[in-house]
Amino acid sequence: MTPRARLLLALGAVAALALPLVLPSNYAVNVAVMILFSAFLGQAWNIAGGFAGQTSFGHVVFFGTGAYASTILHATWGWNPWLAWPVAALAGGAVGLGIGALAFRAGLRGSYFALVTLAFAEVFRILANSAEFTRGGLGILIKADARAANFQFKDPASLYYIALALVAASLAIAWWLRRSRFGAQLAAIRENEDAARALGIDVLRAKTLCMGISGAMAGAGGTFYAQKYLYIDPSIAWRREVGGDAARQHDRRRGHGLRAAGRRHRAWLRGRGDARAHQRPGPRPRRLRDDPRRHRRAAARRADRPLRPAHPAPRRPRCLRCAA
Image 1 (cartoon, one colour):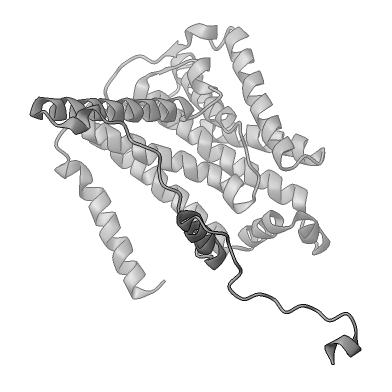
Image 2: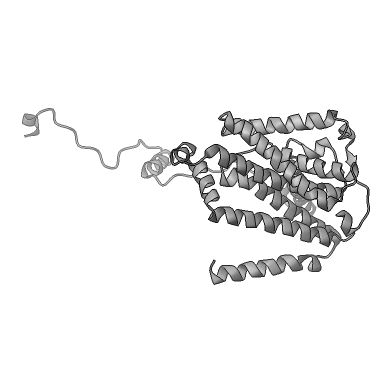
């Protein structure tokens, strides 16, 4: 790492640590917490999808497994949430190892593997809705007791620093993968799995272990989410689209905002008596490419005269006598 990179890293770390102190409200701190949490989940997916090239549509299966594992241990069996957190990460990793072993041993890759992960997420959601120990669709409510020993905090800044530690840990794992032999094996599998197998890489073992690491990280994220909101149910833990509904709502709000701004602008023009308030945008003019023939054709149409070639090609002679 160059000195400049070290300096930028140190400045970024100082800015991240000081951010809760300068934010104006707890709402802004909560927004920062969710940004860091989303970054951590994205890095968890990146371990499998980015480093190994194993695209997964059902990564919520690890997230939900970790959330339910820690919540059941805490709410039903009386475990401390801090002790249940590593167990939840191990549960998510175990599910990742199991799904990876089954799918990769069957030779699934690409879109087939992605659909299998989505199917596992749906199966887990259905089982959680039917099982008694998960309380079905009612979900599990965690008793509110705002103490640090219970993984609950009155100040959102504490959750911010925990989320920041999770992001730092995920970045450290990614840094290790970029510089380790295991990471080089994953990169070889991502580029060409058959060539990696020909080089002697144990493809099944590497991909399965990668899914275990990614699942453990997502399971740890599930515990953080459950302890932040003190509630978990199957529709939250194993929902089919993570962020899809929020993205569509954001696009919908953005579209409504643009249309409302256009209406306000037209109303302002009408108030000024401007004729542009009743005008609609006309057809956009077609642009001509940088092609001389297109320019000459357009000019011929405007002049209403027949098109003639700029440089007529010479006629090819029929024989050598005619050419002489």
